[in-house]
Amino acid sequence: MSEVDIETSKHRNRRVHMANERTFLAWIRTSIGIMAFGFVVEKFALFVRQFSLAFGKEVVAPSPGYSSIFGAVLVGFGALMGVLAFFRFKKMEKQIDTDTYQPSFLLDVMVTLTLLAIAVFLVIYIIHSA
Image (tube, one colour):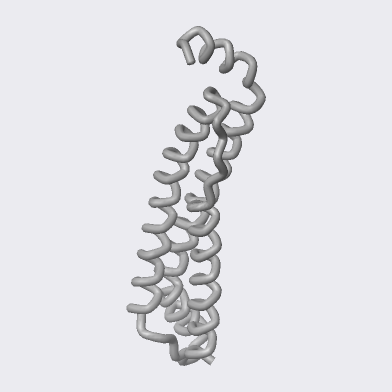
């Protein structure tokens, strides 16, 4: 495909390119959300201890190592998802221009596994603190 054809294709596919950009921004929001949740999980043990001190009640919380490790992993997943979202965005941009779109499911799998890991961790955390 010549450079002129690619430029013409870009102008013809403005809506598709804008949809690709909106999808990229949605992935970025998701990755920021996962990183923020990782930070909250990392600080959760500290919150539980402060909460128990404020109400004068002894609350037994799992060791802070659990939440620190899991929080750091979530922040890492979120950052990795942001980077992969950028690569996906650029790949889709080329595929749109050359009309060779191939769906990709790597980010979908990452989000699903991250949500599953969050759910499992929270269930284990709740069981240990009950």
